[in-house]
Length: 302
Ligand code: GDP
Ligand code: ZN
Image 1: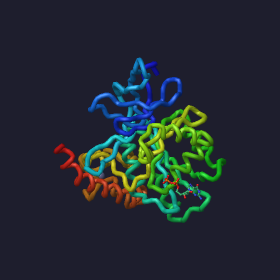
Image 2 (image 1 turned 135 degrees about the horizontal axis):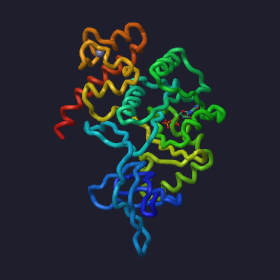
Image 3 (image 1 turned 30 degrees about the horizontal axis):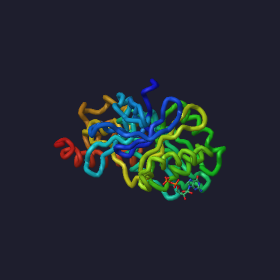
Image 4 (image 1 turned 180 degrees about the vertical axis):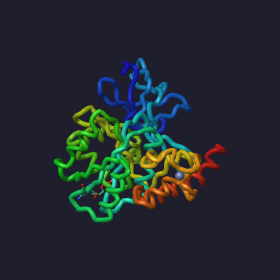
């Protein structure tokens, strides 16, 4: 990183917290009304000659961006430059697998690697939950079982996080903050204090925060709890790219513009019949196609 470059580790609109090349974290202000920065952005900064206040001048090109559809039906970037999306699911309370699927699809569409983490292993797993996990493994996803209460279960996860910029996502209550704290150990408190020094008051906690993990050159973005998630609006064909288990059937459908919904000679539907593709995952795909068909017209008008 050049001396005049920094990484955004928290973003509150015009006010941000930056991580500087020397590792220090410092509040800064975004210059101009049009510049939009998010957690994980790399930015160019300048320092005021007298009071040494930092100002963000420019955002460097993003390597990846993880997006969602916001409540206005518009695409919104949630984090920049993440290399891995870590999707948490739990059996206590039970996570909605349809939301998990949409997170996975959002990562596939953003060209971001994924890792599934089943949390609260110490509380046990129902047969239904284990069946969901198996379906994800069969679809080609790696699943890691952890308990935030037992450091020994975190070993594989720590390895998967090293040399990556990961973002933790999942429904609220799934265990994101507890797991982040378990991974950070004693560093957390110190970093949380800095985040409060932006002076924005209580609502500061709604931002994602980028933490540096104590070992393995790893960064972790802890995102605030969400009720739901849908990827940014895309067309029908693009939705199918969100289901990685469909890829091995490419070119095998009778029609080359097949959307795998109810077309004759569809290789995906045949694979659902034989159980090679999970019926529930395919149902989830159909739901996202329908959702995107509702979202796209108003999105394209903007
Ligand atoms: P978040 O909303 O995703 O950040 O979830 P939290 O981290 O706040 O966790 C929700 C609840 O689950 C809290 O009561 C935690 O104590 C509990 N919890 C989180 N991780 C574990 C775990 O590994 N084992 C057990 N038994 N409880 C956990
Ligand atoms: Zn098909």
